[in-house]
Image (cartoon, rainbow, N blue to C red):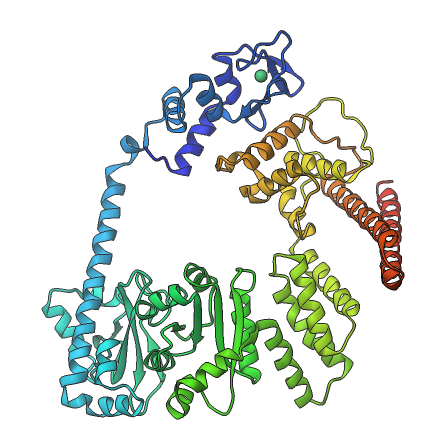
Length: 621
Ligand SMILES: [Zn+2]
């Protein structure tokens, strides 16, 4: 039986690990924790520990450990589901099947039926619009318009284009006659209500049916034929139509996307259809919105590269920046293809054919490069490349750079941009660091108070500066395990969680993935890394961080992070020294320079820490 996370949590909350363990193992209180003889290995003095605050157990003799479910599983030799079931019974919690109340089931059923009905209504409307486009006399101008835009009969059939008549009541009447209600028409996003009654949202428009990623009709886009506003209109947002998730024409593009692993993003239905007509079946359009993160998620399942088609003007730059917001950091390769001399891909294709678009795609440049080039062009047009303009071009990139996961990638992009703009990479990096500091300060969560209530009351050793890198990293983990509230803040500081041993690495990876910093909330993926990481974190939670009265957890974290930074620099320095000894005379000056820079960084960091230390000291007095 599959349990919901909520149910599992409910059982967990009702099953205090101390009392569960005590059914089998006598426990004695030892400080904030409990101790007993390990049931999993034979021993004479107790090394089996239970942590009531964290609801975990750990044996320092044999290394066994886990949460309350793990304990029952291991001891009674059952699977996870059985353990949940027996603990639910113990706590008197009815199992989900029994508990699920009939009312809720009915509600779900009603919702499912409603969506099904709305789907049928959209299907009916699509067929009805379609017939009107090809058969009604009134649609003559629409057919002529379609032909003029290159939408011949074959294309109109392929994309199921339709015509919404001028008469706003016609669709409503047709739907009511088929047994659909006015409420359904409204929910399907097809109608509007006025004092004079219900009438169609779409009138005198060429209609483009829009399907969702599962190939079900979600709504329509309508382009006005003749005079009128707005030029483009979509179905109202509703249970079926959610434009931040829809791409047009998905069902026609899906196969090509999966095959070519590349998507071409254009701005409107007509552009998308033109691309498909000319053999670019990987083209999809957003529905009058910028790309969203949901679009990015959908695309990521099919492609590894996205090419955006934008003009190389101010509007194009803005569009690229917006698209970057949704796409950068998703792992998708993002390129921008530029159109020059034409309004859109539709115009390009009809005037110059497929090879013209293909060469634009071949010449597509990476998003960052596009932003820099477009920014420079803007600057040139607005009075030249002043130092302020250079700063602005680079500053424009900062919000996108922050989204990149890897420090190496950030550094590379910054260096490229710096070169293009004509500043030193060091200056560019410095500006970026300043931006990041500001962004981080803005994002910093309210800090928890000093040594929170419930912290272990045992005698705590005074804080000692750890000596090596691994020690510093171990201390960071220890603090985070005991103060999970700090994990989010630590993430902001540790841009790249590369720790120095596989064990520490496994632990930090787990902690980074754990919702709210709670390792109990993680599902074991069965990997060795998971085991190793979890063991270490568990062990550390029984050896809580020493917190002095004067040092708040957040301050301790900062201090430990700075210590780690210092150790990293020292390691770099040692590596460089080694390299220097091995280097040929020709390369030596380069390395010497690097060593000097590293030395400087170490000194700066130490000075900064000394000053901060003094400041803290003064504060606490
Ligand atoms: Zn044991």
